[in-house]
Length: 389
Image (tube, rainbow, N blue to C red; front, side, top):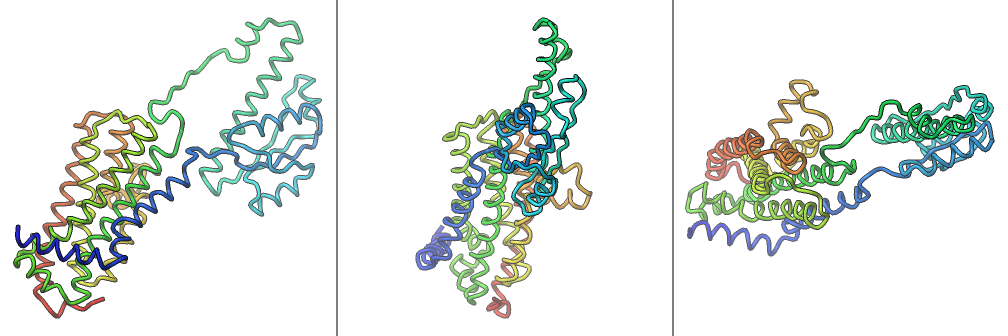
């Protein structure tokens, strides 16, 4: 315990004199998570800009245009009578979609014929394109049903018969999880976990890497009583507590303050968070143990953690990835935590369902730390490895 306290005192001195250490430990991850929260605060994509080319200029076309503008996901930013002007607006990025109402729109509706409305949307951005496509389909189908109902009622059909004709088969769809299609409880939570993983790995690289960079690795090992396990444990106390606290505070705010349901086990979720932090730190120590170069190890840590969310299965299914990409994704600590988070906070799955992911996280932490310790002991006893920046 005396040796552990000596290492902790070294770390406390470093934290007191280094504003960079304080920023990396607390302020930067908290600021990044707060920024992500602010970006996605609305929860859903709304008011996507649309151009309406009205060649008919009739009461029916104006009614359709108002219906499009009233849709929560759409906003008519441009009303024009030329397709060229609408296309120019798309190329400038002013609007993301175009709706073309033909010149004979009202006449076709009055005749009982099919009135065709043509729509284009920018699928370069998948979220925007899918949202506009979904909203356009909803608005046009609703408008079509209204027109058909009015025509049938004008011919003397009863309300009950009209309702059956419009929807002979009623489909009821209920969302099991995230019924509001909100991005905060799953996407922001995943992004926050990615930030925690990144700073956990970078933090482990920093606290040990600076000893090699500054040529003080020997003094660090001596402070730990010559035992690398004690020396490393003293180094990891502050970053482990800080990153776990930040992650747990975010989850508490999400499911407590914001009130998003937490149907699963808090013990399992927080256990997965702690294991993810330890696994990320273990990988960071392994990298610095292999390289003994602070700058290069920081670059490797950033390379590993920055795109980790793309391989976690949150935004694209793991099972649909190529085998190499899936294997890489499952090797990252973030993936195991995200899967536990989806199971516990999303589906309310039994704790046993998350067992394999917890075991993988624990295994990653043990293997990486077990491999890193001998390397770090050797590096700390080799002065020729010191001074590498």
